[in-house]
Amino acid sequence: MIPAEQGAFRALADPTRRQILHHLSGGDMTIAQVSDQFDMTRGAVKKHLTILQEGRLISVHTQGRERLNRLEPMALKSAAGWFDHFSQFWDSKLSTLKTVIETDMKTQKENNND
Image 1 (cartoon, rainbow, N blue to C red):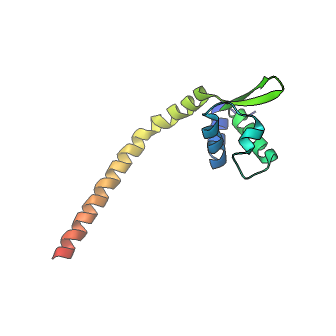
Image 2: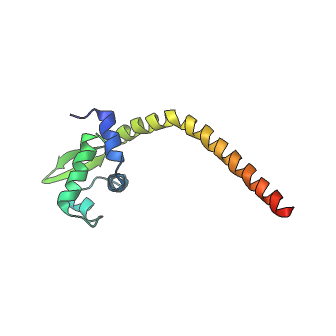
Image 3: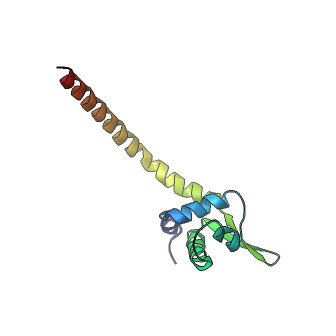
C-alpha cells in the first residue's frame, strides 16, 4: 500500500484527477455522473477514481443501490499544508526574478533611448 501523503501527490499529479476533484467539490457523484463530465470510458474514469481513493482524496460510500464518490477536503488540506511550507522558498525566488526582469527591462529601455 502507498503511504497516504505519497498517494495524495500521485493522485494530484494528473490533470484529469484534479478536474475530477473539482467536479466532486460540487457534491457527491456516481461513476456515471463523473464519466459524463469527460470524453473517456467509464473504465478509465474508474481507474482515476481508484487512484484518488488510494490517495485518500475521495471516499466511496453506498446510498441505496448507488456508490457515491465524495471529496475528502481534510486530505486536500494536508497536501496544501505541505505545499505551503515550501511556498516561502518560491516567494523569495519569484521576488528576486521579478527584480531581475524589471532591472533588465529598465536597462534595455535606457539603452534604446540613447
